[in-house]
Length: 249
Image (tube, rainbow, N blue to C red; front, side, top):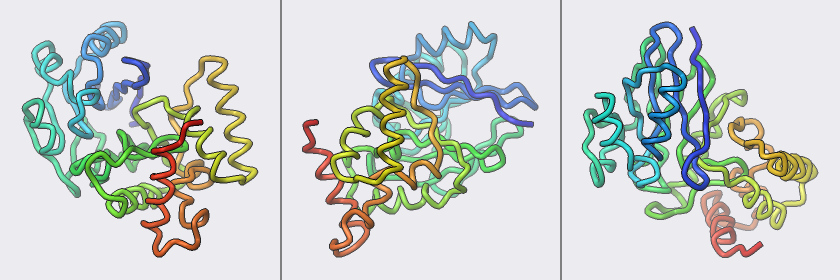
């Protein structure tokens, strides 16, 4: 049976995700950006939280772990780096599997934003929760990792089936689109950027996205095409990432 995903805004620009395995009724939260909002949404839905899946250690992703654990008794799962700010019940790494009832999540190493960042891929339902590795028209900053590490992680996500629905953790798409237009004049990007601006004017989310959409228009995944003179694909990505870091538009 499929999963039901409840997406909601929280903090200044985060998204929260509650995932319910329909076969068992078991529920997980992807990260814990805002414990009180998550608890309120659980109450509205009548869902009982049993699992916390952390992507990385940053406080806007794992900062609600202890509050939610105290309130629900949920099992906390994540990469070892999360213990920098909160305890874990189970540590996971690349290649591990986490079950939510009958739903299987494969753990993918997607380090770069942080060294131990992971993503959770539900191949059967064609969904991936990617934290701060891949954004709609963007990618995470390299706070800890290298350009080569992040390019490897982005390439791994890009290799998922095109139909994969990608749930990224922030509503950054308007600013990402403005930057993308500064480095890429592809017609498909221009059309997507116009749609993004219009959606945000209407107050609509631009998350989730798809692997196909990102491969077609995301300048970070298109970096080797945009910087063909670079010594390697990772170097091309690093150049685009550096340009975004200093972009003022």
